[in-house]
Image (cartoon, rainbow, N blue to C red):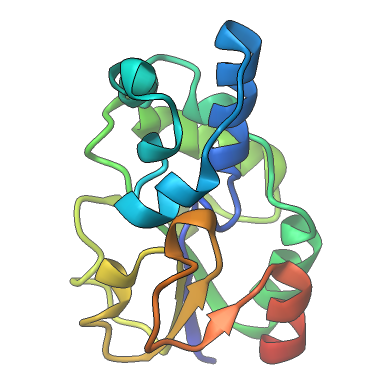
Length: 175
């Protein structure tokens, strides 16, 4: 059985959607998605005077625990879990609160996973697998298996990787 690694943020967890919803509730106003593309960062899409506050949200208790689930991800990932040896792999140690919160988030929204299928780490280069789905090129560049770039606002200008444009597309390509 082939091993498949699936990232969390911007792949199964809607980090951008969660941050935008929080920001609009707290400050109102619009988000500049074009700036996210230029800066390769979610934070860059928010007004300059709020970017430090936005960055701080990643460290706040509850942020990762309360993220929305990406459309169609639960059903498709459940099917992938039957066909592949699936591990959810997240570079989570940069944000210490996210370690526990990501565990509970995953167990709530993807109850078919066993805790042993969750890998929370600092870098993903040490993980061996046949396939990886991730939204950041930096995690895919040195991956020895088949890399798939999961389309997200911050990576629309990235080239050189085959893409997955949402979970229905993932189902067509991997099931």
